Length: 475
Length: 165
Image (tube, rainbow over all chains, first blue to last red):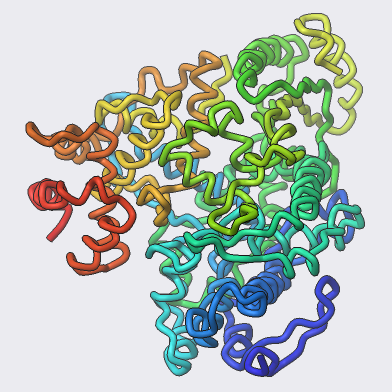
């Protein structure tokens, strides 16, 4: 459609991305331009030098992929143009374009730190009373909704082009029963597809060779208006899920990336606790009103971290973590526990974490280091699919309503007679049906030490290994 | 002992305790009960910053799902981070006002989780989706036919708790 090619942008992942006039105007708004300053992968670029792409380019990619999925549905003849006319396609593309507009600097690390602070305020003090009023914070989805509601340029652009900002927000947040149940959120939605392709391109890892062209030819809608694939695309869909699994393991959960994320979250918490960063709901509303939100990005936070790293008002452990990020001195992994049990058996490994914690308390005392310098990172049952991570295959036959929420998000395969679709893990011939019955459980013990004391880590490792059980799972 | 339970998990545990809702997630109905109870707690002014969208079962928050699985893992690992802690009195008061809604009224032959699903769904459709009553009823009729006969009971319960106007 020519409407969506008013402007063409070169993109390293998709080649050329076409944008409509309204999309082009929105991309020019300060709230969208701000996304150039928010890295999609946080501190992963400290490990993969090219992995510093922004939520700006990702958002353009998600808009592009969403458009391609919608066009494919019409082209493949399973949705009529009256059901999915140009206005409807534009609505979904706008939701895709704007879905990340509310992200904080450093995205999930910041949000996790905020969540901890504002949850703590919900608790009563030691006497059962509380002196100050509890404040709330906004999740990034809620910030996005706020931006759509109050940003004058976005509101004016949408209104002038016949769109209501609440309508776009309601698509992003699923505030109304959606026309297509799993278009916005599923195991293989536009967001995840662009993420995988873009991350592979920028890290140089080989997990982005997804057969997107073929998948788009096989995309359909089942009688319950769920987006699904024909059975011919089963292998391509399984390949996508395997790529995604390896991408998480090799990028987000890479030992050094995960180590830096620990330091980042703790550092952000230190800045938030001292009100160096103010991100409560009212502070965000104020930033949106006075325009400060435009420059509230990763580099702004890095500047605050630089100042804090030499500020005596922060503890030694906090300054150590700040400088470790700024000088790229990664924390070390001194021990790793890893096993791949059946999903139902993951819980039998959970007490390991508590046992390790006790040993770390001893380590901190024995080696005279702050307990804050030691960290236990856990991957609590990572499986190949959303369903796989929560529901045992053996339970699928008796799945009831609650599980349908998760089923709806699984990649679905159209039945041969076209009367319905099944989650990919339910197909007898599916590799996922077998592999999704297993989940990776992993514990890593990290330590960050001041310069000159790095040698201590070998002694910590030795001490830990002497005291641990299940030595076969440790290395 | 170093505590792993994050503040948000501690608050979730205390909210469920205050409402008299179990934190068990073993059964499907347990998880549904938690989703809908927390949705109603937020509607009553106990803002835990969960964003709920409309899914097959009505209001559902993926972030809450992550938190109750993490809470379950922490409790399974004998983490006692919640012990000795309590919610702020004003939040306890709001949850107390919600308690009459948690169990189905006498004569309503619905399980607790179905009742909570009905309340949360009506509230979501009328306040978040901003549907009028007729449109909200139509969605319930289409997606949850077994709950339609109890629509008025649910609506009246929400009105009596000042959760609907």
